[in-house]
Length: 329
Ligand code: ACO
Image 1 (tube, protein in one colour):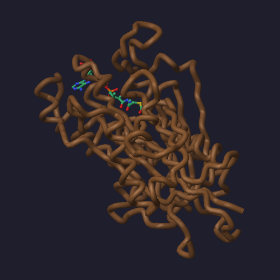
Image 2: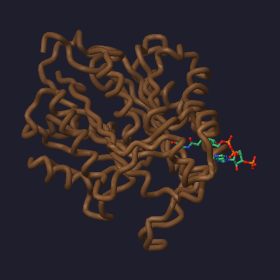
Image 3: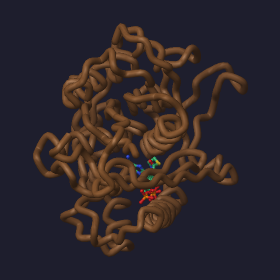
């Protein structure tokens, strides 16, 4: 018998912080509009010489330290990103190079849902394969995809990275069955491709393009699909919503977070929200929020947590996890 446990978390935000007031110096907007419509107060942007792999590397180091393992024990790196350093090779291989370790490394692209997709791929590979210690990272430099002339999108996004360590622990007693990753649910539906996309890309325009979004439509899908996937993940793990200690949702918009909490009838005090401090960091948003709640001693070892996210594709999903490791290990 073995379990796949979440034994470390880490995150990183670029030092360049941009408040709504500062943003309104170069975008036709205001703190009042952004705060009211999204709950965002500030975001962080990469500097000119900072790349997605740098954010990922810093977050990875913190997760490794938090898990109290040697970096050499990592044999698998899965990095969720939409904003790679280069079109190819994968940014994960750059992180592997920077860490100076040997590990199978590749990127996953499911935009804002990237972290839950990466978690699902990691669990499958660790279950089927011989991987023992996996570094799962969500890292994005969304500022590189923003059109500063489009105020309906440019005020919502920021840059950052978060990471977790998954460890396959063998010979674990059956009474610890409900620790680690309990369920993963992922979905995609390309009929909604145009609701949220870049207006360019490698094989269409040979340019990266800028984000375009039908905000109201995305809002409705987000509330529905975040709720339904969480319900599915709860059912798959035989848990009820009341049993969750915490819900760590994708940090896109405070109004979406509150609408889902209301729909799911979950106490809003159990919902982690950090969107105010960093805006929508895409694949980084869940591990950033998770790390913030762990380091501030809100989320404790052994807590039962729901995670869920939605992004372009549309792609969406949810996971139920019991974080940390039993005291006997
Ligand atoms: N500052 C000031 N005014 C603005 C801004 C801005 N940044 N952006 C739009 N406006 C104006 C519009 O021009 C419009 O003006 P008008 O009435 O004179 O025409 C007015 O504000 C209302 O615009 P709407 O687009 O109708 O605003 P809405 O209430 O729908 O809010 C928002 C827009 C915040 C994008 C909302 O639709 C939303 O939250 N959607 C969810 C999308 C989201 O969070 N996406 C993140 C990525 S996907 C994901 O991660 C889930």
